[in-house]
Length: 169
Image (cartoon, rainbow, N blue to C red; front, side, top):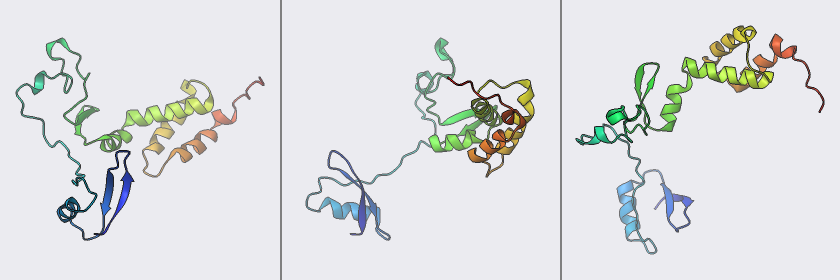
């Protein structure tokens, strides 16, 4: 059977990637009867597609806390798979989608730009930095503008070029 071991676990279990044209059900059946194979099962990824219809789900505050029974709204694991971004509920399926959903939010870009500026300037931002911060936020919203570009822009700004040298310690 065409396939390769992609990971071996301490228990002796193996994760396989099947070769082209090998169907998962066929591979499972063949492996179940192979010598030295204790068990074989597919490695399917499962995702919740709906909120459970359990009558008591709303009372399980650790899953979705709306402040019921005096709890703190939002202090939960958000089992519904959605997040409020700027007043809009956005459904996400895992960390990768969550990262993509928040990556270009204006408040995230502002925080990112501000913290890089503070780090590179070695000080808190001031009103004199507003123009630079605005420019950085705008450029960060452009698809191919990355950290390297941001570093170049900040280090070429007038404020950076006129920083006083650090005292010798």
